[in-house]
Image (tube, rainbow, N blue to C red; front, side):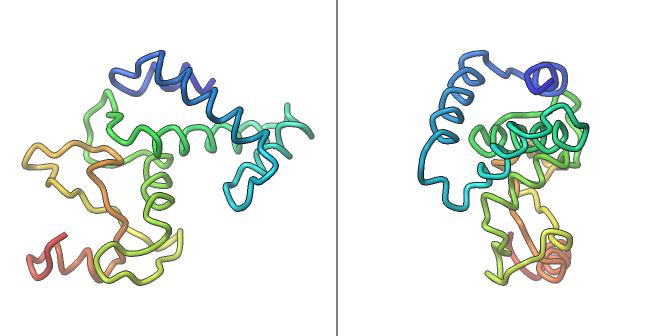
Length: 148
């Protein structure tokens, strides 16, 4: 499901990148020092109740978020303006839940994503070209009062 989604929805996903990602993930998830990587829950859901819909969805979203975070230039085939849910989470995770402008913490339900290179100017809709911002900073950036 993970690989077929990548091939269906994203441009130029090289098989070597996917293989490298899976190998690194396997090494990391078997590590004794998982800490706060989110892989403890992934491992738990992988071993117990692995066929349940919620478990499958959680594992799928974990893989997508981690892949997009580790391959931030991956672009959607449908070059639209809005990031996928997984891409948004990858941006939020990369930015450690902090507004990149004012450095304030932003709740995962309240953050907005800003294109570094504006979409209307040809900026791609990718994790690499996106920043986590709070609503106030995003309004100020859009109004030209702040630089994002």
